[in-house]
Length: 367
Image (tube, rainbow, N blue to C red; front, side):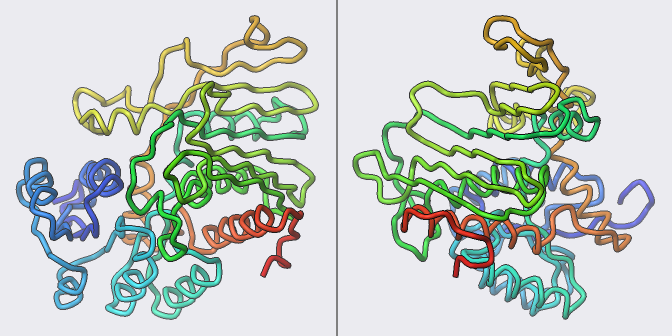
């Protein structure tokens, strides 16, 4: 029972790989108004992994088993490979079930908008797991922008870089178009979404995309430049081949700049088995030491002591599912809409076209 005495909302999680086991299952279970009812996986090792942490969970070998008992569920979360997102979301909505889909919701903006139309037609929630909106650095930057401490933002540089010179294989590194792999659609979904949330719609997109590692078949080093309708220019980098990592954010405004290094700690904590809303993490979830805070200032590089440290707002991945539960209970807006995800896909599709053709693409003219 929840704190109000009502039964928690029953969640079926489709997929128990990286996204399902590291992000979705722990965050669902940490949400007081949700319960992880069913995990969909036919892999015995993944079933045992899930059973170890969630002893009461049920299992289904395929999503089709869920539709036969849709009346016993309140939400379906789709964390399976990208190419399955649209068909499973379509089946869930058709069965009358609200849906959360891991990013990217689809391979194209048209598919995302079709899913949004289906959800609206049936009066069902459809949201997209864009967890990086609740990173500590993003929340801190959003507050600085809102408070006007940067002045008029002129350029937003965002990097999601890694040093992984050896490929891991699997669908994420596949060059097959139907897999929707590569870093543009993986990490690019995050950095583009963040740019649009902060600075509004894109007017035009330019991109460079390369496959650099031996054995790789999908893009592993990509740059995207967005000119926003409001005039801000976003320069976004996603890479697996960066031997020296740049700042996560470098944001330049008419009054000051903000530079932040390092990644939000929540993914690493979740991978290490730490969980939010427990006695050990209550009050310190998503926090980081002062040495990792970003710096705000003008006229001197933060590398030589320029500016002053800005305390990082704690990261808050649990806020996503708390908002989903509230939307289901009270009819409030979902934390991320399918239309917002479609706008991100507009940019990703334009970036792919730009990189292929070597041209700047105007949004609305990329098809």
